[in-house]
Length: 77
Ligand SMILES: [Zn+2]
Ligand SMILES: [Zn+2]
Image (cartoon, rainbow, N blue to C red; front, side, top):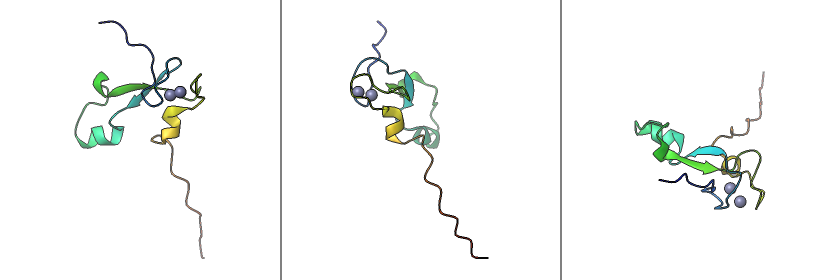
């Protein structure tokens, strides 16, 4: 079986998709007791360097790895 080209599964463009994205998401895999290292659950996606075609950082723009915005600390002492 030939090596699959580095096509980003999110935007569908080839080239530069060097990030490994989990599909289904890591949280889902863990919840179902599945192995997150299984290649069946990994998809190629564009990482921080972005897509040479559309310029998106697909894996980041999906937001799965981003932390939620910090809540405003409103401490009433
Ligand atoms: Zn992409
Ligand atoms: Zn793209």
